[in-house]
Length: 120
Image 1 (cartoon, rainbow, N blue to C red):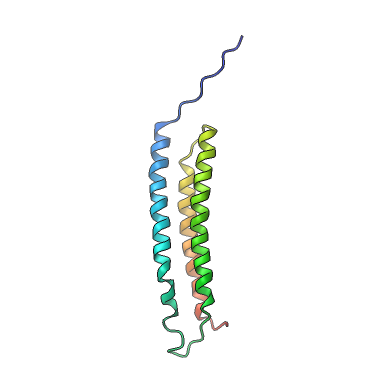
Image 2 (cartoon, rainbow, N blue to C red; image 1 turned 45 degrees about the horizontal axis):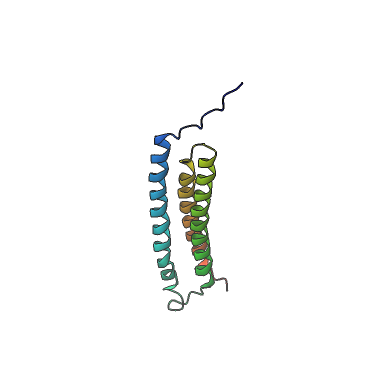
């Protein structure tokens, strides 16, 4: 007769790293959303210097940054829960989330750069 295997113990280092990385993810997400509030400053020179600006790009930049932050937070949370239920390493999910936040913030800056391209 075979004995049922005991559930695997979760590694303490994995839990500690996951919690620390989630705190860093929350901080990066908060900072990205906070700094994106300054995107409207990109339109300061519009009209005054004769530069034609399409201020719709500010909204698109917000969508990129805020959408990336939401994707990072939801993805990291779901990935961590699923990984925890399967008794696998979970520290990588908030780390991937931090990367998504950084990429989305840089992407928002790239989109914001189109504001003064003269396109209307």
